[in-house]
Amino acid sequence: MVSVLAVGTGVVVIVVAAAVVMVVLFVTVSMRGRQKRGAQRRSEARHELDDAQERAVRAEHERDVAREGGDDRAPDS
Image (tube, rainbow, N blue to C red; front, side):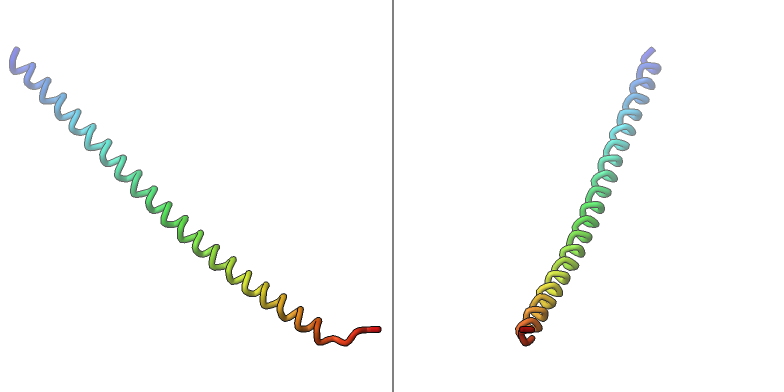
């Protein structure tokens, strides 16, 4: 009776340990994936911000050129 109970207890301990290891692995993989997605989003946001700043600089330049061109023209009347 004691040996059967000891084997049963050993199996339970092994199953519980395996379950704990699986949970830890799952959490670790989930966290790593979340970190990678966050880094990718930050990179994309940085790229979009750079593009927006370039467009703003170009728009300001075009506005300034248009204003200077408007000042140089002689009135039509």
